[in-house]
Length: 84
Image (cartoon, rainbow, N blue to C red; front, top):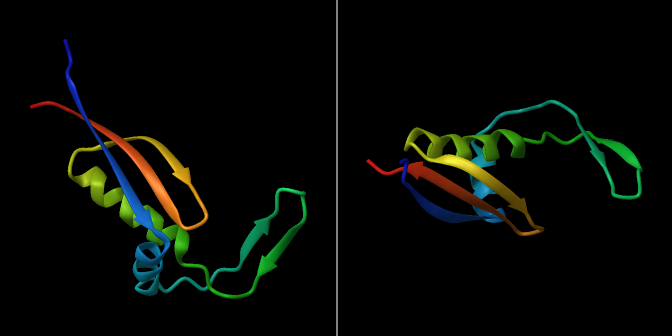
């Protein structure tokens, strides 16, 4: 029978912003609000690449992402990995 260990990590907006500063992405980003209005942001948005980097770092350690909750000032991640 497989056995798992679990972990929860919280990444603050400032941690993601710091990681984003290292990313040089100049693509325009389309934002959509809950009301259905969408618009392009002309400013570079490296945040998606920064979030991917944060998640990939834990993945390299053998953790499997179970769920992510995005809040206004942080990202909560639930992880699991098989006990060795």
